Amino acid sequence: MATSKNMNVFYRQKKNSTASTGQKSTKSPSPKHAATFGSDFTQPPALVSHGGSLDLKDDFDEQEQALRQFDMNMAYGPCVGITRLDRWERAQRMGLNPPKEIESLLKGGKVKLESLFDGRV
Image (cartoon, rainbow, N blue to C red):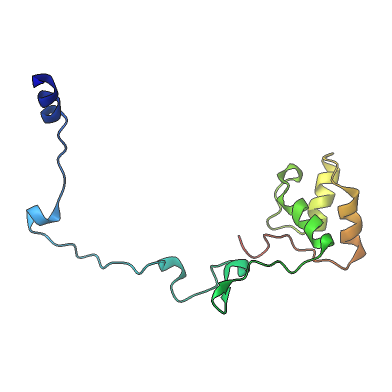
């Protein structure tokens, strides 16, 4: 019993308290969510609220879904700052064997060439 009491004294923590020193903090409290305060630019479009509910529905077809899977697959290298076609061609030159389906989609001209992360990172 005496040992546990000695241990409590030995490990007692000293807390820094502004109340004990009589000093008040001069730093003003920051608003909640200061990074997004007054701006919806920092929020990805999928999370912007329309009419009180989150807009989590995706408006894209199977082709865009395949291209987004290509964007998310890091086996073909980074996709920031490069178009999807340039990334596919780079992966091909490096011998990474990117899917031929992606090449045909990109060269077909009916899809967006910018990656999923373009303008968001």
